Length: 425
Image 1: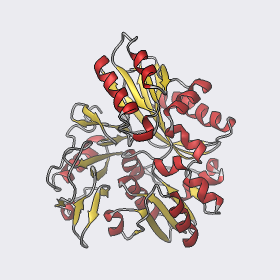
Image 2: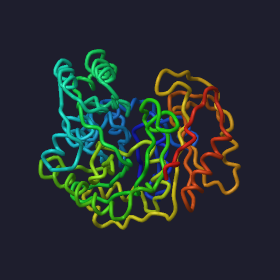
Image 3: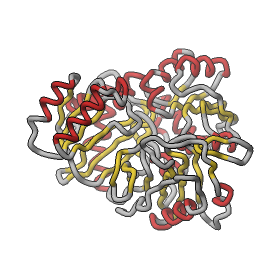
Image 4: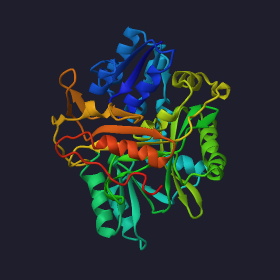
């Protein structure tokens, strides 16, 4: 099969590695891709992931057998719909189904209609109404979320009135997230361990993947601003088999069946962002695609053929699949540019990549994200999250030791990474 991956980050690099391992894949392309993908032999095409028209034209002209749409933007913009309309098979949800991530207001409304446990909330489309509401509150902190997509950064935990007012003005008046801040969701603050669960879906059936524990804050001790994710471990040590069964019964299946009943069946990868509160599991957020960096820890543990699973999801025959996972644990550590998630420099030489492959028995994989290949073997930084180091092992300690040993071999000016990934586990 001739396959195209849409996207450019380390998630796409992880997807590419898994897809290339399938005997069904005869040729792999990525748009726009990155230097690490190109170094792996993937043909990178300079088309932006958000350019639905150009991607549709390219996929039609090249006659791809399957297009895997990885990022949220093109899914929410309807790339899967556009491809399928041209007869190009695509993995991912339709535009209507992708609204489960594209609009926090839609997602909260869906949870309310289906009785999915979640935090109490109110939605606002006018800054004055949102400000009036928070001024009436007497319990802090609260959570403020931009309605639309914001690269994982559109969530603020406001500790007091000043922080809440600032967040609403930045989102709704200053438009720091563009149109994504046209609306906001203000919800109660909940506490408890967070769990990420990705699930393969075919519209009717659902198969959860191995759970993961993400680390969103920029600095050790869960301090600093939210990011797209600084590291992850899998499986999540807080997610017991009993809890998994409860989430399947109370959250996963009701969500999938409810969407189908409302005429928006979900096919693709559905991400459940959960919190295990004292009163039980609740949904913090949905994503309509593979998580980043969760994918970089979960897919290395997948034993079954990813392409076969994707085809089964699209064709509504997931129930036929026997999806198997390797024993052990995995971890992914993100190496970021200094200043991320704020302003950061680019074009800085990355040193030591050649050394990571020399670590004895490391089971270490380097996934590229914000990097650019200048020569055959030279890379420079080109983004906020530059690399993702993924390691597998018999237990969590083993996996973490591998990624941190790998991080010690790599350097670039201002390189930053958290030293406490998985410490809670």
